[in-house]
Length: 265
Image (tube, rainbow, N blue to C red; front, side, top):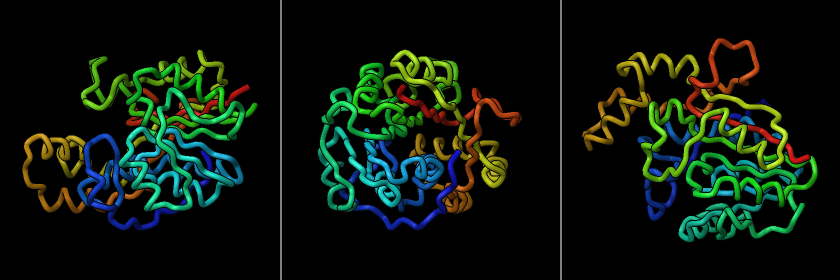
């Protein structure tokens, strides 16, 4: 993994961008756990974009494209939702953002060095076509970086996603197969895990701070003060990213999210 870029505070976003469950939004206490869990991947991998031409395919709120723009030569961000594109254009003017379908990327062949696709591929109906499009727009030796919820732990015991916005979730083997079938060489597969401080929070909240949050959301119930304080205090540094091939005792199938780095030959 590349060097970790330190956390910085995030101001609340425009309330006009709704919290739908499809995207994470910075600056909201009740959303902070999920935001930081996504943000850690950007912070770990941003240096791989240093000085390069980068496409973020599915930029969401735009905080990730903004972070990458601090080190990249140029960042082009795409999203299918027009309101989101307008939000990114207003909030992050240094990011070039366009409305686009990710299965028809509006870029020329061999035109970028890196494609970033974090917490998006599980939303796509035609994943192979999207990955093929990534191969088309990348230059030779270009890099595709993907993160996605681990199906085994996110929707345990079922092939039908529990999240209504997800179309197909993947495990590590399925993600690897998807990339290899498109002609990519897989450079590494990693898992995102709770670090020591989050493990302590898990213990304080009945064994899982995730389940504690979901229970409140499902019941539409007030949050206990201790739970809200813990969730609001989570930082990206509270997550560990572990390579599947290391001697770390944690197994990739037990990870929360998957991260894959693939190279176009």
